Length: 616
Image 1 (cartoon, rainbow, N blue to C red):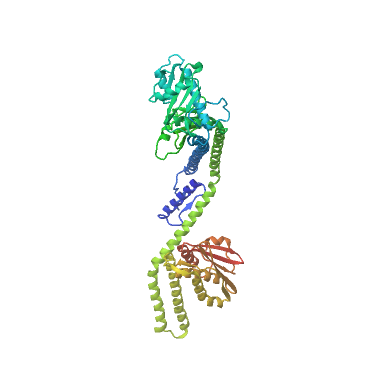
Image 2 (cartoon, rainbow, N blue to C red):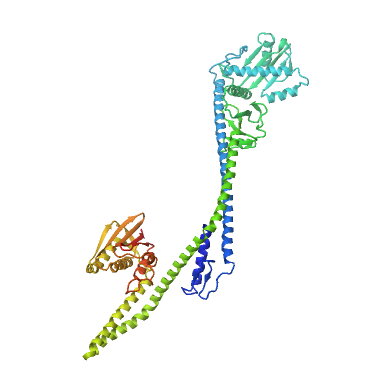
């Protein structure tokens, strides 16, 4: 539709441009090929005008349809990405929520170790064989004793050395690992606190204890350092693990995490998880985690400062990995990576892609149908161009008539005044007596009357030419209507016509030219008086509606024929015996100059209604 309107506008502009050089009435719009002919019959377009008219819109519509199909596809793809972003965002929030819950459980366990509201007391403790219902302190002890047993077995493995022992201390976060023989001599390891640790080994070797622990004081985790010692099987020596405050807190935090993970209720969508130290060392993880801190692309961003989000995500095959840090006061910084299955989300996205393909096909079909409908609508557009051309010709004629009246008015008025004065002087200074007096007086009277009539016509032409020049000011429309009624009521009373204001709801002051608006109303109502003739009624109503003031003038005259309704504002149209039909044309120009409009409703034998709509 937009393309066709542009073509129609192009043809109207072409007509307007030609009209500047060819007089009105010499232009006609042909029915078959829409070409513009002059009076001589020369075609303004070639013989291929019809082909151009049909091929050009079809090509434009095809391009526009393809553009809209492409635009729809792009927007649908953007919506698909938005849906994917929303689904990923939901999983991210779910993962962040689970990390927070896990952190809360781990923090609770860690505070139990640090604050010591229950658990082990004293410097030495023999581990109970019952592992059910362990407190978090007992859980930490069990973890460290198990670690000591595992390390003790490594001493018998081939290639065991001090270098391997040093690597073991670094990887397991142990300050010192000391191996003693049956006699209490140091076999492997070294420590600055060797004297105290050696005395502990003697207690283990004498057989008083199989396990010796110093991790807590008054139920609280030691702030400086602690140790765990075990006697080797068959009394073959002892092993002591010494932990400084940093490593002791690390193992306390690991025990708190392990205990929290063991009792945590994971969601059904979680397919793997891992908890890692700040440098990427594994604390707890499921087997064969596909995503770890080493291959997580946003690990550096999470480690950076500057207000970045406290979690990040990456899509790995059919899973979404979410990484977040646990920031627990007093505990080592740890990274949690959760892997969520995206099978359900993949199904939603697949269904959305299918809808996009179907919708795009539907849009393409609609575009093809639009091209077909274009050819059907051509005749209607041709009629619209004819109507626009006719309106343009009317406007040109009106403009030409107004300019003609303005140009000739001053030239005509002076001779008219001279003729009128000459006729009066002839009647006064050169009277005729006798039988020719009656004819002489009749001639001078006709000259005077016709001079007055010609002068009235000149005034009408001047009014038509200046109807668009307004002197706007705030004024009451009701006051203008009241003045018009005051002026016309005597004339109407003489013809037994009643004029009344039926409704005076228009109380607003409008930006109008009161004199011009008064003239327009005088012309319309005077025209109604002439149409009624004798015995009738004219009703006037004012109303304010939706930012407009509406003036309705209804008469009980004979009405206007339907074929004449389109011509009543034409300055060359009139049904009166006397007059040139400028009254309604002038009223139309004045209302248009006020950016208003006139609507006419009429039915033969029942009367006519003029509705004037003025903007507030």
